[in-house]
Structure formats: structure tokens, C-alpha cells
Length: 483
Image (tube, rainbow, N blue to C red; front, side, top):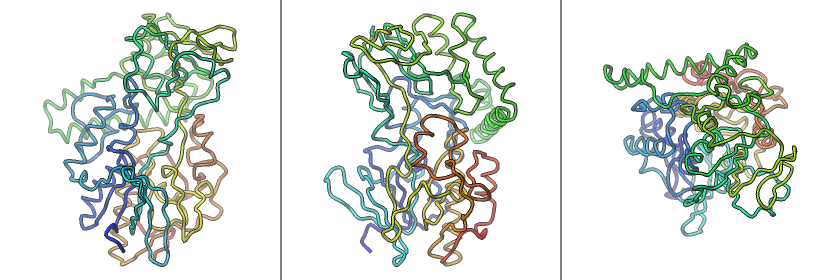
């Protein structure tokens, strides 16, 4: 083995990778580990996205790590604050020294003979290929393509004389002051962009094919600020986190159990915000709550921009781009200097790395996940994927805790290899994210693992259930084959 052999290698220095490293430092202090990050800075999503108003769409008291309180009363934090929180966490826990930047992992091959993973990574600075080996591999790359956002093929796109800017590749000095801007989309990115850009743009139009469910949320939690004044930081964080967990869980459960009642409630909240100044048809989805992710509106800023006339909303289909803007199927034309297709993401697992076992390709779309943390038939490897119906980091914390438990168990029992097995007959046609009907999930049907039909092979979006399975249940449950 060369000098670049580690007990654990983590791919990605975002929320999941930093979290995994912190858990390793605490629970497996004798393990030698490293983080391989393809970018030149940590943060993942929060380093990549630079568009105006970029922020969390989950409350920070559940998005923050359980082991490191999110301070202050800010509920929906901006991207720079989140990146700063991650950097401070890495520095305080001493994991920043273990990050190797500018290394894009191209290959990952498991050798049964050597009982280890061999990774080939390209050094961005030198262009040379480097070899890294590890006993245990953890993929913390999120689930979307960092290189390319989703961009539909719009007819007449080449005819448009203005600028087309995808949010995933935002120019550093884009000047939209006084400009006419059209934002295409109705998801979290569009909901964030429209009111932020409307502060300086001449006018911003939000063009959506169909509406999404929206929920206004205050950016500051006054109750938490009061608690922080009279209670120790850890206790006030714990109380706020527990409260917010309960509320978000109940909101999701009630939406699945009583969709009509929740639909009426959510639409009533929006109607109250709009005060009759905007047609409710633009805010009335044709699906049930939580069939797609609920979009949060910070301080109701989108509604304020619409009511003030700084922004407007259109629900229609695009016929084609023109020289001066967009012609809609209804015949109406939207004039634009800048068009922003906030049309979503392309999903991929493991950052596009195609793992192999003894030279044989692992076809991810034919696999199911074990306890939603390991891949069927793949030894000594974890994959951290957060929740779609709650804060990403809730899953990160308990998934990382499980992997540390597994690593320590293997050491105690003197095992070298752990492989999830026994999933025969447990595979469905749907994907592990089939609870969401979002377009980006449907487009990724050939990229994602299948949904399991029972037992540890079924991926559920349930923090309470997962906490028991990952943090309390026995490691040796009959589904892991040890060597």
C-alpha cells in the first residue's frame, strides 16, 4: 500500500462529508481518514450556488448538526452563513486539516483480494491522476449533478438577444438593475430569486407551468431568541430543535393522511397573504400537499413583491423564445432582458462515479439501499443521502452515527468486510425517492437505486423510525455478511 492509504475515505466536503468526519473524530478516534473534495473550498451546495438570495429552505435548528448548535434566531439562513457555519464546525472539530481539495474522483474499484477500495482521482492543479486506497468508503456527494443543471430545450432559444442565466452557473457580476427579468419555474430557487431580484430589477416575472404549495415562514424565531437569553445554548437549541422537528413531522404526516384538509389550510394561508391582490389560480396546485416538496417563502417576501407590483406571476406554457423575450402558448409575449431558467437539477448518485467490484460495474439503478445507508451487494461502503421531506442534516447525523457504529463493531469482532445481502425479491419498479412526484425525480429514474418493498431495504422518509433503526437496532441483523 502507498502512503495514501486510509482507514476511511470520504468523498465530498459538504454538509454530509463534514458531518461524517466529525462523527469519525468523536466515535472512531483511532481511525485515519481523509476527505476528497473536487472543489477548492468546502461547503458543497453552499459553495456552488451563488445566485441572489440563496438560502436554506429548511429551518436551521433542524438543518444544523445535532452536535453543534445553530446560534442566533435566524430560521432561514443565507448561503454564506451556512457555509461559514460548516467551515467553523470543521475548524472547531479539527476535520479541516483532513480535507484534500481539487481532487475529482474518477474511479472507485473494490478489490476482494486486498479487501479495500482503490480510488483514482484527478488533481485539478496538476492534471495528474492519483491513487488512494481505503478500507471503508463513504460517498457524501449529495444527489445532483454539480456540473450541469437541468435545462429544457426551449424552441427559439438561439433567437433571444438578451442573457440566459442558469442559477447553478450564476455570473459573479451580473447587473440586473432596472432590467426586465423572467424567472422560469415555481420551485424553491424561483421562490427565492423573484423577490430578491425584484428589489433592484425593473420588473421580475415568475413564469410557471404549474403552481407549487407555498408556506410563509418568519426568518427570525423570537421564541428561540428569548430562550437563548435565559437558558444554556445547548438546552435552548435542543428545545427549539425538538419543537421544529415535531411541527415539520406533523405537517408531513397530516398532509399524507388528510390531503384535502391540508390543501384547504395551505391555500387559506396564501389567500390571507395575498389579500385579494393576486389571482389564487397561480397558487393552486393540481396535486396533493407533499406530493412535491413544500416551498418556504421567507417573511412572505414573494407575496409582498407581487402585491407591490415589483413582480408578477404568469401560469402558462412556453411556445417559444423570441428575440425580445418569451411567447406563451396563450399568445401573450413577455418582454425580457434576462431569462433565468430555474428549471431544476439533474440527479446523480456518488457524484457520477461508477463503482466497480473486482472490475465489474455496479449498476446502481438495479440495486436497493440497505437501511438507506449502504448499497445492496457493495462491501464496506456507505452513501449519505438526506431527507426530502425534512432537513437534509437530520439524516446525515444518524446515518453517520450508524456507519461509525458499524466500523467499531467490525473492529471489535475482527471483521474486515461487511456486505449487505439478501435483497432478492425486495425490489420494486419505483425509485428510492418515489414518494416525491417532482420532475427532477422522474427524470432520474435510470440513475437512482430502486425502492425496497420491505425490511431494511425500504427507504422511508421518517426520522423517528430511522433513528431507532440506525442508532439503536443491532448491527448484526442477518442482512450483513461479514468476513
